[in-house]
Amino acid sequence: MAKCEICEKGVTFGIKVSHSHRRSNKMWRPNVKRVKAVVDGSPRHIYVCTRCLRSGKVQRAI
Image 1: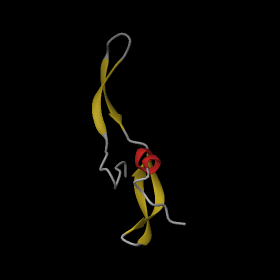
Image 2: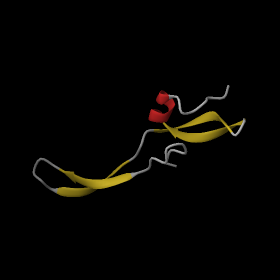
Image 3: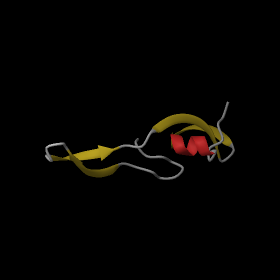
Image 4: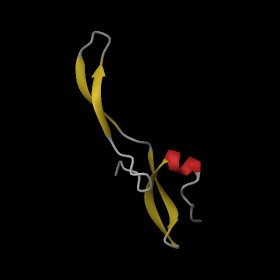
């Protein structure tokens, strides 16, 4: 679910480093919303990141 269906942005992994330099694995998820959008001429629900919504890559359905 944590994947944008428009730009394919997904989860990224890395290492969280604390102040005392203890390292642990961390996962960053994109800000994905479930929206009703027009896809191939018909409205349906898709998961879209907020950057695609803000930039106008998605046409919202009413």
